[in-house]
Amino acid sequence: MNIKKILKSVGMKMGIEFIEINLSPFFAKLVLRITPFMYGLPYHFLVMCRGYSEDLENFTELVWADDKDLEFYDSETYPQFQLWVL
Image (tube, rainbow, N blue to C red):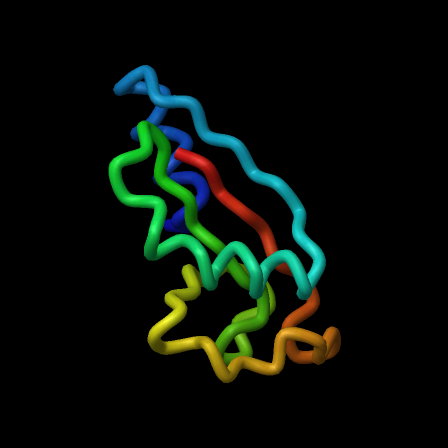
């Protein structure tokens, strides 16, 4: 099952709102860089990428420590970035 469907179904049952925002590669990298400092906020921020590990159908969560050297501006390999707010 797709992670987006899981988050939406679980969120609806728990009364949690789920928001997706499309991001440019620049803002995806910027938000990914500052997310480790966002602890304690009432919302969770996830930077998601379509095309990671050649998976063009699903989104994969990015983590700064692992993905800081990702080629964010390669639109063929990474065609879409989103910010998910939970």
